[in-house]
Image (cartoon, rainbow, N blue to C red; front, top):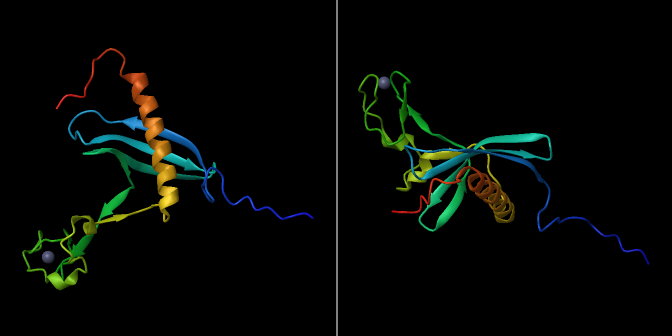
Length: 149
Ligand SMILES: [Zn+2]
């Protein structure tokens, strides 16, 4: 009896597959930002500017995001969220303009593209960090260990 077998998981991942990862290491100013990456899915969809960040407990990835702005009620200048006064005309900006009143900094940034399952996030992160480690192993040849704090 033929049982229909679904190929729903591939290495524990449903759906999209990473087909290419490009790493653009960042040196300098921002020590926490280690690299930008460009990731291609299924040879047909590219996401740029996924960041590799050095956190306190290791490397992690941050999805591309944009800063949310709040516009001035008077002149419609786009101000940073959290601004009390318009940077353009000085008008007080009512704080109830924003729904991000949770005291959470991250609320100011909205991801432009991001995985919606934990599983895919892990798949993405594992692969990106692997590619990053390979890339840096290649470039750091004789400059000694940068691991000192
Ligand atoms: Zn204004």
